[in-house]
Image 1 (cartoon, rainbow, N blue to C red):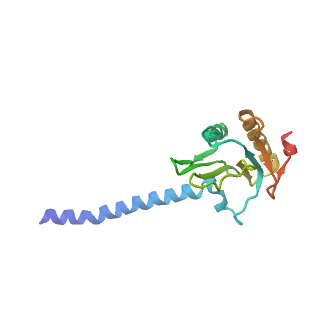
Image 2: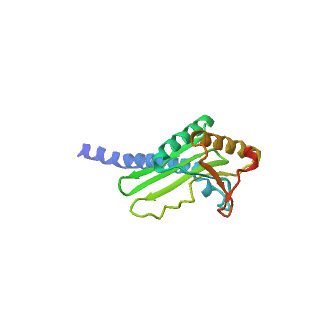
Image 3: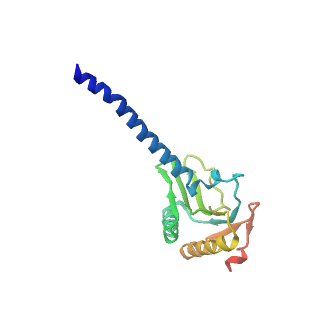
Amino acid sequence: MAVVLKRHRLVPRVVVVGSLVAAMQLAHAQSIDGASCHDSFERKSPPFIAPRQNMELTIDESQWPALARLLQRFAQKRDWSYRDSSRRIPGELTSIDVSLCQDTIRILVVENHWLNTRVFDHPDRGLSVILYADTRSDVWQPIGKELYRDLEANWPGKAFFRGADGERINRPAYLN
């Protein structure tokens, strides 16, 4: 009977310690997610940041992994955070979902091609590569210039720009 009582007295301690560990892990996970630059729109008030550079790249799906690798190197070179949530479900979905960022700048590439429809077919549209920034132009423009240079080096003549209304525009002057 004494053994049963000792074991019984330990149960509440184990439950309390286990609960504390679980709560600490949950709090840590929430603080990491909440502080992520990948979730920059959720941290802003109002939650809107206009694109500073709206580029499109006319490459096909077979080139998406190469683009993701280029963006990963771009992020590593600057010690930025990189996240690739791209997915491929054979016969159903091909997606690219890449985000690279630091505290005030985020580059985002997101496209889903549902293979059982053709809704993604837009002959006049490329894959959007958008630079968002909540900082001065002298900070984000050099980043945009280098991004454009890297894309052009890998896919010559395949990068172009869109204006705020979606119209195709000339290359911005700061890229010259």
